[in-house]
Amino acid sequence: MSRSRLVTTSRHSGSNPIGRFLKKITVPVLVMHGDHDQIAPYADSAPLSAKLLRNSTLKTYKGFPHRMPTTEADTINADLLTFLKGASSQPWCSCLKTLFLACAN
Image 1: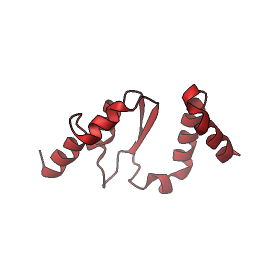
Image 2: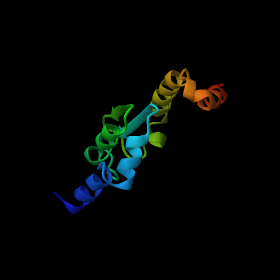
Image 3: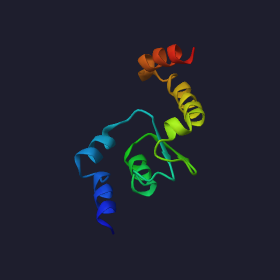
């Protein structure tokens, strides 16, 4: 295993501070990641984070780069809005619902 892969993998283990933090999150989380990310390689990040999150949805974008929120904004925004619409019906999400409705209009 390369040093960079080892470091990235260790960041997403359940025994370090980030891993312990991710395990504590119980609200729905959308993990979005392009499989052509050269900055944070997909295999070393998104699936590992999604696995530690109790209530996550992993959305993988074929061919999308690290800057996908800007280079692929239409796709990313549409998927994010769809996720937020579903989440906004949850009781824990009243502030998110207000924010979503303000942004959607």
